[in-house]
Length: 349
Image 1 (cartoon, one colour):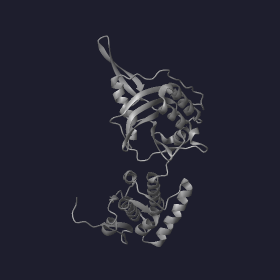
Image 2 (tube, rainbow, N blue to C red):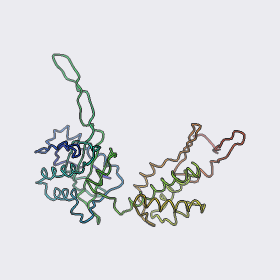
Image 3 (cartoon, one colour):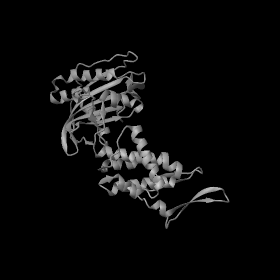
Image 4 (cartoon, one colour):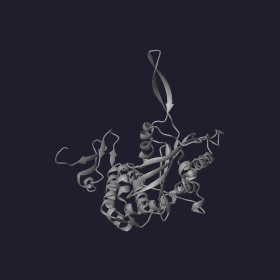
C-alpha cells in the first residue's frame, strides 16, 4: 500500500514489446518522454493508482542467487545510478520478450519509469515502475475542417487501469527489495509474476493471514456448504472472521477450539488443511501475527449468502457470528416436501 501525493517521475521511456512465439519484433525508443503538463498530470496517478490499495507485497526470488534475478539486478542498477536508464530499460524489455513463449502472450507498450518520494508505510522512497499496456480502446476525436465539424475513430490507452504493472521500491527487509505487482489480465499470470519478475510472497504476517483465511474460505465452499448447508457455511465464516478480529496473534489450536463444536467437522477441516497445503505448495503456520489490512481485504471477499432455488437469498452479517445460530432456524415441511428457514426479528430495518 502506497501514497502518491508527493510522488514524481524523473525519467520515463516507452518501448514496444513483441512476441517471440509469433515472431513480432520489439521497437525501442532512444529518448525519455518529455511530458507536457497535462499528460504528466494524467499519467502519474494512472500508473500509481493500482498500488494504493494493495495489501500484499512480494520479494524477488532466484533458485541460486538473488543477484541473478534479472529484474532485481536492473532495478538495483537504475536506483544506484540512473545514467544508463535508457539502455537498462531496453534490457528489461528484451527480458520480457524472452518470456513470450506462447501465442496467448500479447504484444504491447512497455513503460519504464523512475519515481521519487513514494510513501510506503512510514517513509519516502524511490522506485522503479515497469508497466505493460496490452489493450487499447477506441475513442472518437472531433475536428474542424472547411467550417464543419467531423468525427474520426482513433485507438489509444484508456486511463482507467494498467494491464500489468510492478513497482520495485528502493526499500528492503531481510528477504530483499519490496515489490508490488498488479495484473488485470491474469489469463497469463505465470508469465508476469513467475517468468518475467520471478517474485514470491514473503514470509510475513500478511502472507500467513492471507493463506489461512483463503484456506478457510475454500473449505467453506468445498466442504461446509455441500455437506452442511449454507447456514453452517456462513456461521463458520463469521466465526473465522471474528477470531481474527479479536486476536492479534493467531494460534491454530485456539482457532479450532473456538470455531469448531463438532469433532467430525474438525476432522474434515484438518484433512482439508493437509490437502490444501499440498495442492497450493504452501505451509500453513501454527502461529502467526494477524495482519489487520489483509483481514480487512479478505473480509470483503467473503460471501455469507444462502442462495435458495426459489429465487430467494438470505444475507447474513459476517461480523455477527452468533446471529445465524440464534435467529435463523432451518427445518423441513412435510406437507410441502420442502426445506424452510425461519427468521426471528423485532423490527424491520
